[in-house]
Length: 418
Image 1 (cartoon, rainbow, N blue to C red):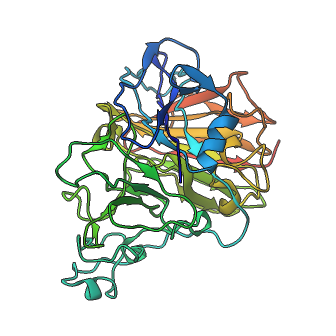
Image 2: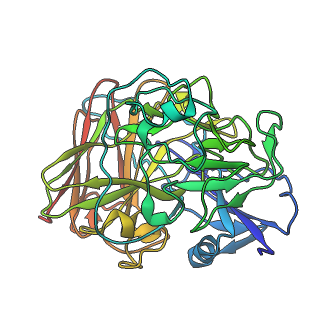
């Protein structure tokens, strides 16, 4: 039985050559009673890059200490946000100053079958639980709220299972035993699911979606101390309920505008944080040599908000050949110093309210100093330039950002070292 419950808070910022949030990851301590309410500490400063600090009360702890708590099921991540900012103008010649979308947690594992993004044609919403789980459905099919057993993972509605986590294919499970769904305005007691857990009554159960899609479900009630909560809800009858019922499908299509092309001779795992949810980097995109993939992008102002602020999508780029099982986790068993939470590079993306997507590629600092073992070049209909070659950014910085006008496309190319 756990005697200590810790919440890992994280503030992510999308910055331009403008003020942006200095990130502090807050660990809130809990001893068997509801978490004490606190306001997250988000300080607006002008800094050349963003960095993450893990904080328990007023004490900074190391990433290793934070990881140890995650491994033991004692931590959950709280609040990854994009503070308000004013983006620079995008033109065909403008060069943007370094702009960073910062990060959160992750997890790890091996190399075998990689998840694929299959979508089938939509079918009419089923009228019973039995019909709902056996009919022809897909990512565009309406989800029959309150009809499917919580023990049934909703792959027929587009959800992608992350089997390697050992949580019955769910990307995260957040147990909220003292919360009344649809009644309470905040969630003050949250227990993070661990390996061996399933989606059970009183839990929010999060999931991955196909390439180019994001999860559409999260409750309006969020953590009392800033925790993000996401996924379907397992109700008192043991049935899965929509938590954002105005959105009838469980995955929603992103806005596009960002693609990855893998020109390596091996595959590469790119892992997105499960947000809102545990905020661990467990949502997989496996890129095969010679293929092109959608890197999911969102209109930040129309997606999940944390503490009233728009949010962005955060990715971790693992070394060549590291599988999603070994890279889309916190602590990689095969590459403990250079994959998972210690992956060399991060990518952040989100479209601002003026229709410009800001796409950032930056070092995963201060967590790791590991260099990526291949090059990355951003090209296409972009403002600015961005390239990571031979272990360093070509302009000598720790990262770079480009702007992508609405309707245009940026290409992120993974290529052999030049």
